[in-house]
Length: 145
Image (tube, rainbow, N blue to C red; front, top):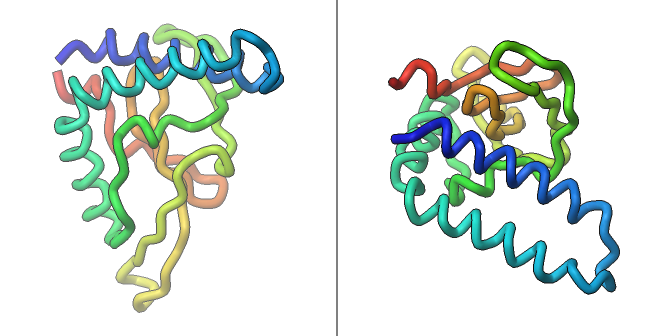
């Protein structure tokens, strides 16, 4: 699997979504840009959906979550904010309100249900989980070469 290409497509989606956020619905190019975003998402889901569904299913099991597993592109946050530059490229911050919220149970909390957020991050491609202010990387493509 070409994780670098998927990472590039994720960055493209981030950039396109940022452009779309700045547009008014009445902008004549709004629908075209929205269609382009959906086409990239559809392509990613068709080519890599089964692979990432297995990874996300494993993450849900690890977190002890009974929530519904979505298409993997649904875990791309709506907005990303550029943060720093590293040897891997631009790093991004994600607002939890712009990502998928999942409920999970932790055995040490005697069945208490907690809520966290799950989302993709680029450079390198990885899946992060945010609980409160603590972000944890649950999958990293660099480990899967």
